[in-house]
Image (tube, rainbow, N blue to C red; front, top):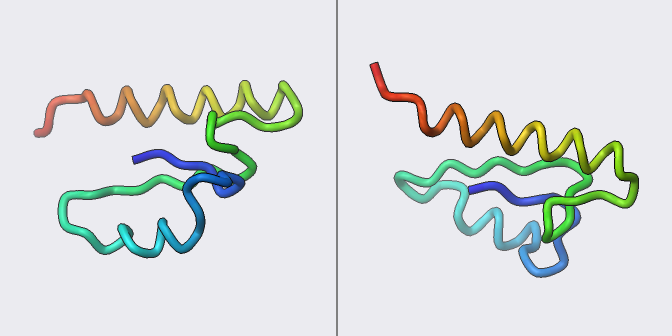
Length: 63
């Protein structure tokens, strides 16, 4: 799961509730809102890079 720490719809309390659930890995991106964007477009591009890397890592076969 990927969420931003500046998300008005998915709050810090929500993150705490799911953090210890089995089979759930949560990645909290600093500065990202609900759309995984930031106010500054360069920060949004950096967030997109992070999300792309997380997706690529997730799709790699397990060894």
